[in-house]
Image (cartoon, rainbow, N blue to C red; front, side):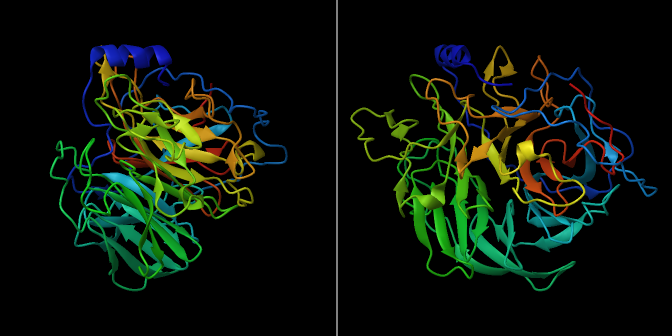
Length: 450
């Protein structure tokens, strides 16, 4: 569901106040094999629009012949969940508190969690069922929610640190080594108690980017690492602030076509007029120390604090409705190969996972958990920001997590593209990993229709 401008006005009138949903809990992950059958409740799926400016691709794509598969099958996803016609969705693993995802070259999948554990799902790209999830690493710092892979190294971002684990195909080849510290100072003395505990990580070439959440909803930080995106070498050296005054840059991802790192997160609450749009931006392309304005300035250099000078604040390139809570993102490689590669409509585009919000109108959360698709062209969103319409740049892709009464069967978190082309989506409420593939490819999952 999208937040209309009318809903924004109604929300302002209601005077709602709460966190945008980017925090974490202390729940430990439950690691087990997927049970047979579906999960959760059922509901009638809603139609999903074609991405803006896209041309529908025939389903199945011409020349695709289903591959016979006689092995164990992947569990069908809840029938309430919906992907566009031409795709299929299944549940390949149960991982409690699943957050950020990282696909490995051999087809395995790493899962950051709300606990100290990083979980590995072996053979996630199998034609049928994946292997049994297991603990890949345990970090002496929670939550180990941030995860990325690059240069034969697995990087993990926790509340207070950044760790690296050497990796060779199919095996962890070393213990976790702490290479950098974040949140080295105290919580802001004027904090309102909305403290974010997560950190996120992305790799671009020889550079590591780390998003560090704030210690409040709206305050002036005294810790120079909070409410920032940090940049450093792959060994943690030379850490500097790439972006500042960013409330919670929890969704970090690298565009393989350009090497640009994009970040997204959640805006502040409790504003006197209306909640600002949630945003993503190519943070690595900005000058070091780029100012994103929180909490005084957001959106198109709009001042939310009397007398604030917003003239030098970054106006982000990609906008979503208020309270979306952008929690995960991944680019679909333009040159992706493999039996589960998506149609050309999606190549080079960006999948963005929204955690949804507990902010409600009539006890119904105003933005449902979902995954959106953003078409890209020339390294930027194919459609420019429309400051009057935060729904203009994207379309729904994976929906059905919330019904009309506000009941939820899950909350989407991390997203990743597998080595063979599958799209993986985490869910920290249901504690599962979903796998999405084009119809007509080898899989056991049922096909979703409009």
